[in-house]
Image (cartoon, rainbow, N blue to C red; front, side, top):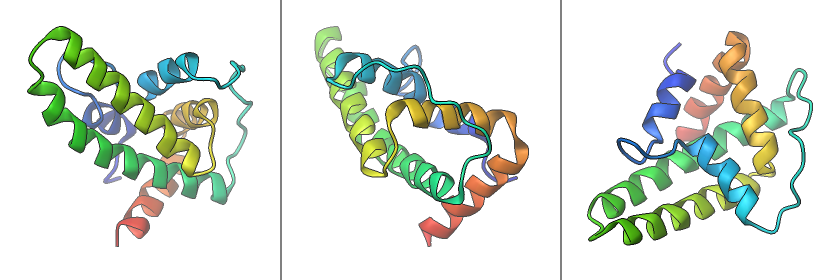
Length: 131
């Protein structure tokens, strides 16, 4: 499998000691007006959900690349935190734009990490969407 969600988690980190995107999105949900909800029960995700998830991961990759340099170059801790917050908000918005709630996205991260068949399907959708 060319795409590993463990590698995905590492790729979306904003540098050493910073939050990973799935965790960051959970924090954003708590900070936004979204009603806190328990993660939805996810059985076997539909193809539509997997395609949306794959698209969201691609956008999160893009946003991570966009924000990482800015965060690294920030003058002080306060500026870094402000930039991290803005990046997390954009990531959460990207997930919602793909038709998923942050809770659904986080639940799908868990499913992908636990089910190799689902991980392969998401990897295939990512490759398809990247063409």
